[in-house]
Length: 464
Image (tube, rainbow, N blue to C red; front, side, top):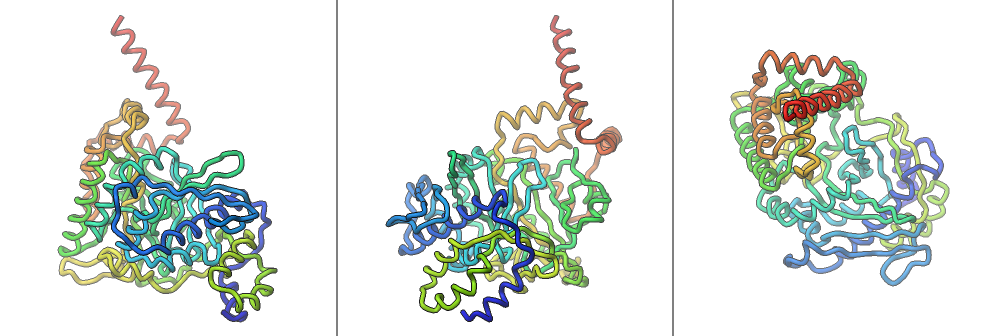
């Protein structure tokens, strides 16, 4: 690669420098280095059939400044664990993700953009430099649950190439100094790198607390709206008979799988692209925190790169990294659709699922859809949440309910979303939702606690 070409790529990626003291700098370096070495080791071996032990396999790697026969020298000391590498290699194969492109996307330039979760999990999301893959930090309990159902998940995606479920391409753990362990997954991004997403919705089929203020939705083009926003805006996934049947059939298959595994609290992520507006709003070009090879060493390494193999170049680049800030004027994303998308029916229309009318003719809207957050088990904690939130609320409108009820409600809501039908609610339910939305969330939580104490006192009085 010539120096002029390297400079042109940097002009796309680099903005205002930020010092190395970024709170997650070391974590990102360790994640990417571990992925690069562990995935490369697995990919270097001839492909083979899976055996039962592959689903429980865990390969450990230790990195330090000196390096050893298994790992190269590293900028930091850390330990890395790669779970079920052969299983996830096969998952990537089934979804037509090229191994070399996977590594180059994630680790070719050590570039990631960081976003904190807007949900309750507190997870962090890191997008690959081409917006193709997502690294998501997860709780240890989620990590254990993924391993528990991994064989079932593998069989499901193997038998359902057009599944709407999140595409999990890797499960890893980083152990930092002080024995702090960070578990994370690598997933495919539901949204494409080449299209502005004009509206985003996270739909669960529940209504209690499922909204954001209209002002926030108007002022922030990346705001994730929820079920009540969807209903208030009278939104609809507009699909003709052919596409509607395909979507509903696949959704039913996926939801039945989730119910069989005791999973709940998942969502249908819906991104809407207006083909008439196109990319004129430049919504993709937002300020992002990224990880980039150090600018001062780039020109020095350009001449040396001519004498080095690709593996040596990647190893060298990984040692010289720095945190940068992308400015809105220079942040640009790829204009092409990732090649693996064309193999899935729901991603085959310019990377998404084009809407259609009742005559099956295409319309202006393209939908980018996927079922996300699919590893929440109906645990005792969730059972208590069901009990707690149902005090004074109808179970039909709260999120935490039994997987069978959750799945049925989810499917019904999505069918209504396609057909443009609002759910039927009693006047009392409508009033309850209005009251909740009018109360600040912190005060609402206090009210719930007081109601719980009051009901408990009533039960105690009756028993006496």
